[in-house]
Length: 166
Image (cartoon, rainbow, N blue to C red; front, side):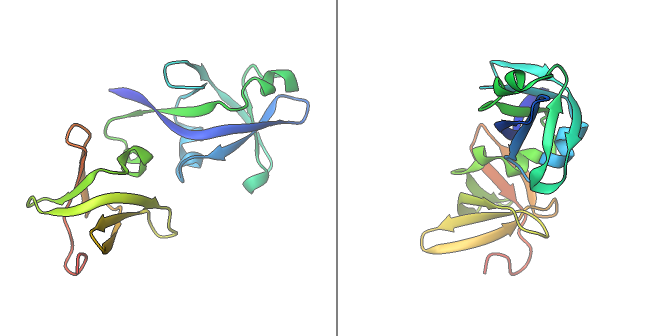
């Protein structure tokens, strides 16, 4: 089933030709903004389909132009809105969703490790910070370890490697 996942926030209009600056909400922003259908709106329920027509500049100075935005006034209407990518339930971006904060982290054998407290964007791979009393565990978000997310049980299931929880 397809759903919308927030990947960026429009922070300001730039120039006179309808360009906007976008603050990424996910490290996967660049992958998804170019490869997935997009929506923009103040919420998922009040969003509409948009199409990226051009990217100007590079790095943090990039500006995005969406089809139909032809002037600064049009771009100003997008400020404060969220850019959503259309994804399905099996999409890997779900493993780094801020919605997971507060979920229980359990092993595939049923042992409770603790509560997911943070998601870190690290150079090699993202990681969960798990809090368990006065202990803290750093769990890499890789398919060999993170096996499943259950939103109904508010839990993340992992298969720990040797030494990961010591």
